[in-house]
Image (cartoon, rainbow, N blue to C red; front, side, top):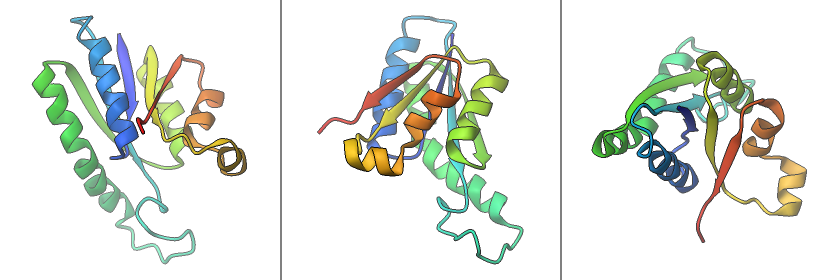
Length: 143
């Protein structure tokens, strides 16, 4: 069983990882794919910012910081894992990786924006649900 867990460093993504690890511990052959996607917005750069050519390098460094704790948690649980750092539109990249890696399920956090805000802004989770053909489990942040 391959489980894809998009990580953004939020409490919601940590809850999703906890759920994925709980599932993975039931299957010794399970592997958790930890994915962090960076783009101009997550790097704090505007789309009209002058590109330095170092965006991908900065994205990889940012991903390393986000994925470090998740990797440590997988190791502590004894769960097989891989980590991936990608650059691009977040929902579309999650769907592409799910397809390319051949995952059985995507487990991701949901911050619960609320009906109106979610309707107006959309959410990455909603976009992924509509884009992908594999099951998606949304883990709502406590609170």
